[in-house]
Amino acid sequence: LAQGLASSPIFAAKQEAALCKMSRLEFQLPSALNKVAVVGTGVIGAGWAALFCAKGYSVVAYVRSKGSQAKFMKALEEAYTKLVARGLAAGDDPQGYRAVSCVFNLAECVSDADYVQESVVEDLSTKQHVIREIDHFAPPNVIIGSSTSFIPLSLLRAHAKRYPDRVAIAHPSLPQWDAFCEVLGSSGEITAWLAELYGGASGSDGSGITGLGMDVVPMKCEAHGHVFNSLSLSTILVSTSLVRTGVCD
Image 1 (tube, rainbow, N blue to C red):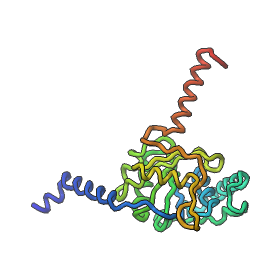
Image 2 (image 1 turned 45 degrees about the horizontal axis):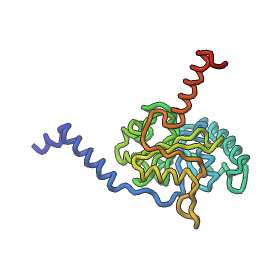
Image 3 (image 1 turned 120 degrees about the vertical axis):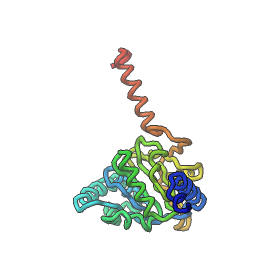
Image 4 (image 1 turned 45 degrees about the vertical axis):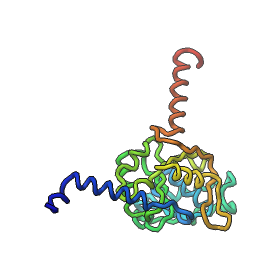
């Protein structure tokens, strides 16, 4: 009987729900950050790596091959150069980006990180798979911020098995170009924590959380496209309508 009960779908679902509830109860927000893991090393990932590095964080990036590493380092240098030009890099050292390290194993990248910034391709199944892997390997109290442009948070975290509540949205335009960032966590407390990280707060004694100095929009609930792309799509729609109805060229 016990064996049959343990193998039943209802029992398994209840057990998973209990584990999920336990993970929520045990989860605590980090009080200090030192090491940031960057997963996804395209233009946005390189921008995040450059910005976190410029603000004094130890940054490690996950790359899949030597070729990916070479492309990332080139994009990282370009991004860091823009930050130096904007006066956002500590010491204005144009070679400061060289402090960013690369690893070829995802588990190695996130296993001792204090924060994870995910910026892989905007594809639901890909992001769900990568976030599930990050959630599996990252320490329990580490927030996973995703740069997703459109995907709602509930879908983004759907496959995270250990601590789904720590999956969050931290979406910029381009970190190396401007200061916009919209954030949303699974709770108001997490959203406020993200706003502190991406906003202007800083540790006064060299510990705590050093803010990135961005203009942060804390969201209250999820929406397809969040704030930035919802407004962008609305602008495109209205602009197209104005031209097609002859109001303007």
